Structures are given as C-alpha cells and as structure tokens.
Amino acid sequence: MTPEEFQIQFQKGWSLRNDGRYEEAIALAQEHIVLAQEADDQASEALFVKLTAQVHTDQGAHRDALKNYKQLEHIYIGLEDKPNQMHALRHIGMLFQELGEHECAQKCLIQVVEAYGAQPPSALEIANTHRLYALALEGLDKMDEAKTYWQKAKTVYEQLWIPEGVDECDEHLA
Image 1 (tube, rainbow, N blue to C red):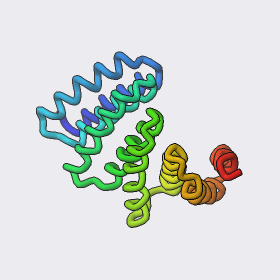
Image 2: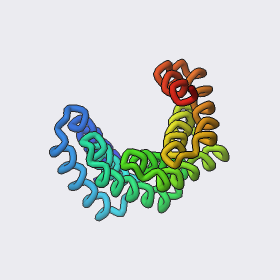
Image 3: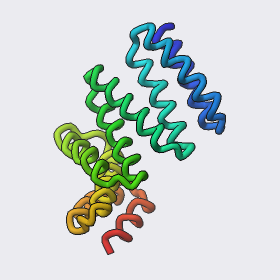
Image 4: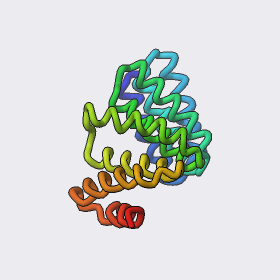
C-alpha cells in the first residue's frame, strides 16, 4: 500500500471511531498495523497505533491505551519526530494521571514541559500539558508547585478564550 492508501484507510478507521464503532475501528487498525510493518512504513504504522490508542482511551481501557501510546512514542523516536513523540508522551502522562499513578505522570509530563520550553508547539498543547502536569503534582501533594503550572495554564487558556480551562484553573488556584 502507498502512504496515501494508508491515509485513506486511517480516515475510514477514524470515522468508525467517531461513530462509536470501536470494534470495527480496532480491527481495521490492527490489520493496517501489520500491513504497514510489512511495508516498513513507520509513519503509516503510527497512524493506526494512534487510532487504536484513541479507541482504547474512548472506551476507558486506560492500560491498553497506555501500551499503545508507549508503542507510538517509540515509533516517533525511531522516526526522529520530536513533536509527535512529545504529543504521545503527553498522552502517556495523562493516562498515568487517570490511573492514579501520579509519580509516573509527573516524570512523563516534566519531559514534555521541558521539551516544549525548547521547541514550543501550539499554545493549546502547552496549556493542556501544564494542566496535566499540575494535576500530577497535586496527586503527589506538591500543591505549591502545582499552583505555578495552574497559573501558566490559566494564562494560555485566557489568551485562547477557553473559559472552561480558565474556570478549572481558577478552581485549583482558589
């Protein structure tokens, strides 16, 4: 398959996911992960691993999603794609947070915070990362340090006109 054909199949899988047809989306993704591996096409493989991870996240299967996002991070390391690697690592941190593994979340998210300081992504990605890092710090009872990251997130959410983000930050800063 060509990269374009993989992209078309990925879009079909994403549509299945959006329609709540999770089993079909997973089946399509698993089939195309194998095809991409056989074609030695890591970029296309990453698409379907990401689809699988997102479906597992949607289903609340956080351990499965964590496994998928770790696999995705390793693919991006191999591709030397730092922005997507950091995006995957942010999801890993978020999933550790969801699982109550705050120390693991903090270790992942500090890497993302530091990488974003060196090579900034979108403002929303930064705000969301600061938010997740603050939650991880709170889970470790590091409230003073968490407030710093809540304030950073709030500043960006205000700039982006995202009132829900500002409200959540205010709740934690109060």
